[in-house]
Image 1 (cartoon, rainbow, N blue to C red):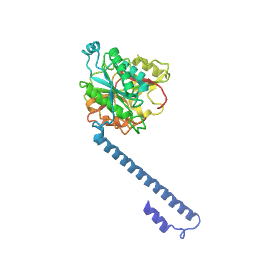
Image 2: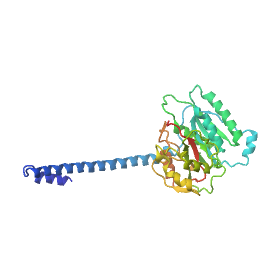
Image 3: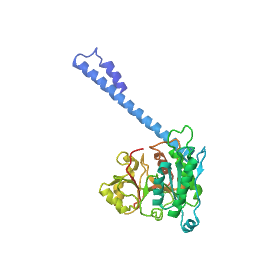
Image 4: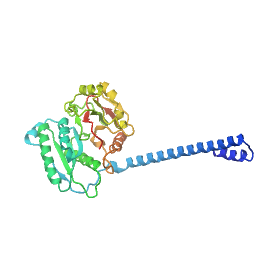
Length: 343
């Protein structure tokens, strides 16, 4: 392009042409400049994309995603051992998978609902409303955990993280790391963790008791996530057939598909509604499903992500990069929540 423009200036200059020929030559030069500008911008965009990919790959290869972070500040543990009656119930239960979640204290009712629907062991990290209130809230949490252990026959452990000075946003990934570390220490026999947000309810399909075996060693099980359109629909006790009917009637839909379809789109909700067995899916950019994953393969969360939005995407990307990892969508199980305003 550059040579053509120089040739045009040299051999087709205004001094050589008159009238319409000069206009055509001028237009030719302008078109060449425009095309050259577009080509330069394309090259720059490709270079920026390559640089971005290098930065992301470099970040994902660092130990920050695979090592235990250093936590500073007081942590009040609100964990009670099972009562004698609960301990007897646990004797024949294999704690193969621990549900891990995080929340602020205003979501305590949602936490109780989630733990009851799961029916298995739970590890949770709570964000205290203030440093002064942390001790009292820890006591409230301890009572809630004890009640859940009695009602579900499963162990429920939790910790409370007080706010630190200068903390502007909800430390979502710090809390997720606390729940994950607690699961590893309190449930050493568990082979898997269920990573899910607190506003959901687990379907009435026995996910903890019947995970749809067999599970390959590196399988990452995608638990389809749905939201109901109306708050009048009772979430507890929904079966797979119930959800298929709600989807068909337009009363439910895939989670966040209305404004961020890339987040859960690869789950392929239409395929799930017709599926008769689990099916594999490919990882895609911005995919952020709720998953059951081998505890040894789960990296730590990047604690630089705070507040709301995009904080699970990088973590799922890490999971998908584990050698031998395979994303498998469960066809009989799901989680569901009510449609609610964006945080």
